[in-house]
Length: 362
Image (spheres, rainbow, N blue to C red):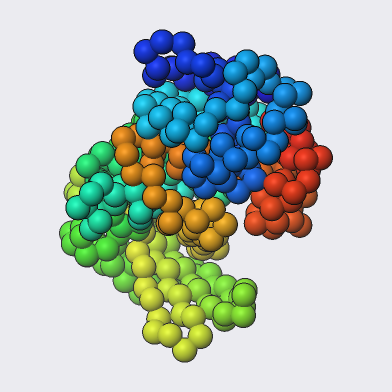
């Protein structure tokens, strides 16, 4: 609780007067509820009442457990930037136990049921920075005006990227994004597609030249989850393109071919700040997808984020941050053999296990 209180002291209380319930205590109850699978403010209030005896051991609870309306009003009013700042401080405390380096994947995820009335076609998008090695969400931001590229730029400004390789899809293959990554001390591996025709044409030409010169390739094959997939990669020098195409930090380009089962072969091209070995490049590209397979999949399948219907004011963004924080806490539990679903179920059923999760919050 001490670490939590220290990190969340930066959260500004949005209530005009001192509320009947302590802000830090409400956020702590909300986190524990999320760890036990709570999805809505009504769930948080039910959890609080059910676990009042346990909570009383670590909290004052001067006026008892807040109602679901009280939790709802808090998350609707709370400044998301303030909560996100506390999220980063809390995650940084975890990161002291492990080194954050390697692949940092940035990607957006729609909060599909959190749209405003009449805007079901454009739900808000939460952009997250994901450390692939540690499987931790490092920071989050709601894309301004649903502009994911602008949200990613805001996110990069929050991060220290020394020793990290930032991976992003073709939407983010932009000069300002590349410059921002370099300014924060990172390298990049950016997918490039038809949205940047001159860059894609130059990448293809550089790869074709390297192929004629019989440049080294690397191949892998696996059958994870019963799906056979073969991949091959080639990397080509492209220092001259950085100046001719005015693209910051560009040193090399790469091509990755992949074929799954009887599906058609897929060819992708990438811009790089380093001339990686082909096998290194394959590993980096594959690690990028852990943000989809590990973070986004868990949010939807385990925490039902796609069905979360909090829509008013700041509630969708704040509750999305809370879910990601809960997953970070659960992932820091040392038993990797327990699935995330099982961890959250067990936390709700077994108070001793819930306390084990909290014991890692040091």
